[in-house]
Length: 326
Ligand code: 8YV
Image: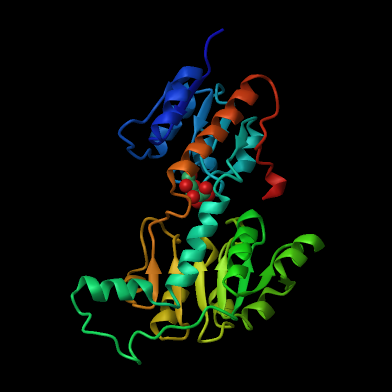
């Protein structure tokens, strides 16, 4: 039987690529060059399976030029907002993702930002690097205490819950907004308070963590109007998707000190970042590295392989993305 032809759009960790080569007729991207629309269309015309990532824009225009041979888009990543899943499914193309395996790593990075921003860790590092540490002072480099503060989590899925578990250990009080409340057992475990109204939650929190996916319903969920509901001493952390926050409005407010600070791992127009944000000492910026661990990336690759193998064997892949879920 001839092997399935897969085209992998980005360089993946070596063990993942080795396994893909063994199992499939795999076309790899060894120099990791990013694919534009025409490259993606070309790939989707010679492949049975496209292994995509967040940097591949598979919108309806690109998908409408895919060949009949394409049967599966196996996304290497949990978020699928780079793919028009509705159009793909309408064209008979199954879409899968890799949920679950990057939960703990992303939650760790969220917690790191929750600590780094109020405690001014990056500012402190810069002082030392610039040789400007002239000795301890009782009133210098004062940040804000984490213990006892209210954390409002937007999106209480796997990652939101993993953040809540960590945050509890740091003495934060857990509040959350979600489409639906989580089960009573989880609410009890996390001592979490559900807010049906996002507006009401925002106006009462000390720290906000964005942990929901980017969908049409969550685009600019934190709009200028909603950001203005936050207390001026509040902090925002985002390790989900930049599009959930109106980045220009956030930058303006931080600049005017209408908010205390922000920790951002994702941006609305990645890799571009609003230049105002880069100038502010109250802001910690990371280059979308929430899930960037070797273990996580290998687990993601393993999930991609399982999805492709199950599909090739005539079964429903475990991580199918159903448009109604989005
Ligand atoms: C991934 C992510 O590394 O999985 C996601 O949704 O945001 C990242 O952590 C990236 O999407 C890979 O496609």
